[in-house]
Length: 100
Image (cartoon, rainbow, N blue to C red; front, top):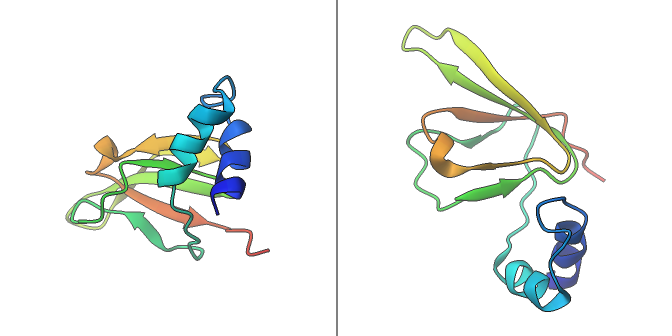
């Protein structure tokens, strides 16, 4: 998995100028997950330690939901974009994941 993570990271602008050794460090701790369409990835009560998420091949909607169920879309993120867990008060919703 390290080689595939390394390849993915090297294609993302934030990591594109790193050396192979630096990419190996990051890819060594990377974890790849697949999510279904409309599956919540991060929520306020989420206890998993996903502090930095990179969208590899999909699109996600970042939104905030009020207690009465109203949603406000805050951002739409696509392939190569990323978010950090400081958005923990928002829900991240997977949209149209490519399941290839």
